[in-house]
Length: 171
Image (tube, rainbow, N blue to C red):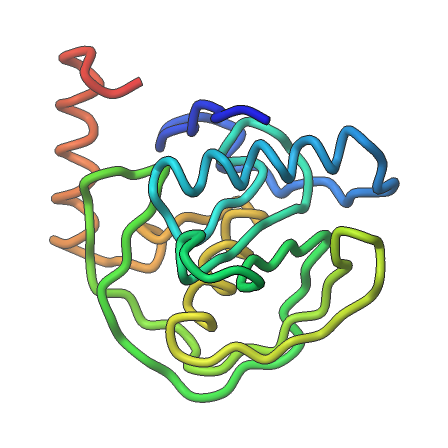
């Protein structure tokens, strides 16, 4: 298992819709293990495969950041089936480090996916779990949390990233 580099805003892989996982084999299990190590080291509560440069429809979520056994969710080929309500809260992203902004997301989300063993599952998430599910599915579809922002809020973040990129401090 290894901690992988997290791809930052501006990388093409973050803007491409990911490809379905067609076979759950040892390479997928190794990727999941490496993603878990990477997410916990960051630390973060969710990570999509394209955030570590792998164009596969795979994400992980653990709201406890590894502190409570059994709370890690491995979601292969996830699809949001239903959403209910809305909630507006601060959100950040491991691929856009040090930036946080208020984003509106569904308050409840029903997700259908395959687990690590290839078993079809569905799960409802509420509050922070619904936010994490929506955020990671956005990644897998080539969208980032800044895409939910408008006007000054979005421009401020993108201008700061542009300055950091030009100065060589964003890579």
